[in-house]
Image 1 (cartoon, rainbow, N blue to C red):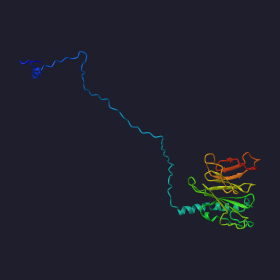
Image 2: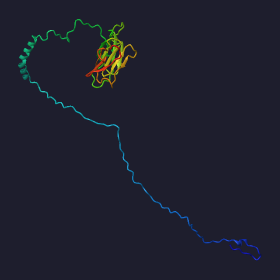
Image 3: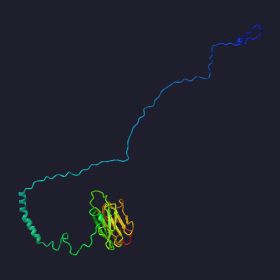
Image 4: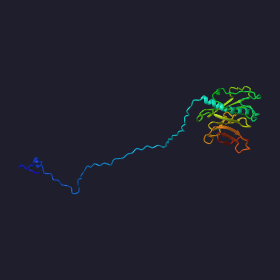
Length: 273
């Protein structure tokens, strides 16, 4: 700054300071360095994907076929040849028939299918009207007291597994108001009933075998008499055709049920049998 004075001895303040434009001086730092920046691009390799399906079970198909049955061609009958054949064998057949009439091989044998016994009479005919003409009778059993008759209703003619119901009907023939057209007691099971058998000494107990192999024991003195004593896993796999009560002292297994074609045994908890 340049300071000027006047003759009067006073300082001129305006003249003391004035603007001056000087060249800029750059003093670079001795320790700081500027950072350079560069831009670059990069890319990873392509990702590979693969879809695979799976199932928890396996399938297998097998085709079978029965043998082809050859068709038999029908031929027209030759009446002349047939007549000649009958004339040739007529003598032999007549001789055999005459010989049979003089034979004693069939003496004393009656035709029981056609001859009715004169000593047997029909006393009572029982039928359960709701099942009439729908479900056939498969088996009948009398109780030890001789008063109750049990009937098994079921159908044995099945093309595949049985899906029908079976019925066990009882009539007390000694009851005064017994209705022969309606059972006194009707019990149903999940499969057709094939056979029934009362206990030899306990008239309230009866066992029955079904088409699906199950064996059921009924106590007719109880409100819920049915009790299955065999299952599809540990029981029969064929229809039960017969049930027998065996003496406890004579066999090791007192309760026996007979399916076709095998034999299976059950043990009963009732004393004596």
